[in-house]
Length: 380
Image (tube, rainbow, N blue to C red; front, top):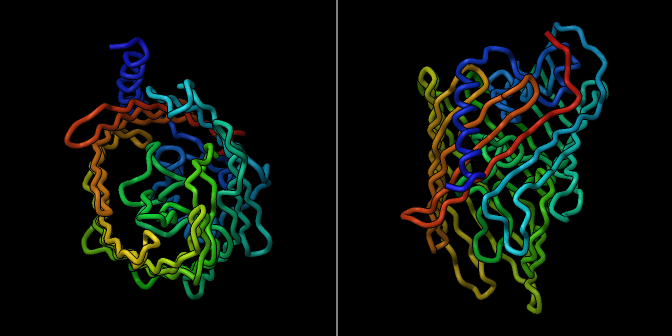
């Protein structure tokens, strides 16, 4: 075992220990905590992932009625230093710093939110998210306009508990580069009927960046929306701490490969999900089916399928150990198994260790990251 691998393994064991014995709340990006004089651990399970209260806070337009408001710094920094055992092709750097600026401000009853990646590994800075949000208390409806994440069963790109995209969500089909993890330009509405959460999206464009601004990978194609993309999403509780979900997305991509004529690809994606919790154990699973009528520009229909199953054990309020299986086929199939351990090791920093391995076998990939939010709120 190399010295670096041994060090990361020791860090992983340390994460589990710290998570098991630490009782103090964790803090994260402070803008909303500053506003209501709270610690960010009230909303985050492990930075930057949201807990149930944090998701409800977000779904209400970032408002807590009845609590006095305080001034904020308006802009905050999320810095992440990543480590990879095997550098990407063309690089010898194992440690990669990256960061993002996050801004939030109230304009009347409208919340303006921005996530700007600062660039990494030679990649440029870019706008990752930027939208206006408004929550109508009377109709229990949240509206967003701008550049937003798809309302899937979990945050597909911005607030993940690992460094790798989940299953089908980050995979492209044929020459269609638009993935489920890619933020969309458009309109979104989320509505609650009893305990059922419903959402709809209409998208007219997409983001070209990443949450922390990695170097773009040339693909030889350019892509736009030939027609708007529409999506419907539902989350339905069927028992205590058990929810099932169904998603349906349809659009038409205009694709121009290098040196070839423009063509359009009408695509459809349908997904089912399960979110179940019992005590400290949490299960999250998702399965997708897709069809692209002309995914290769040659008139060839491409069917795709994939998803993930994640099982994790909570160690206190702000630490987890877990395992996840990812799969994707379009039609060639890939599968992988990933284990991870993560915890808030101070009041404002997360450490993550993960290792992935192809199924049925192959070389492993060991990675780690330290994520810190600045400045630090002094909430109660």
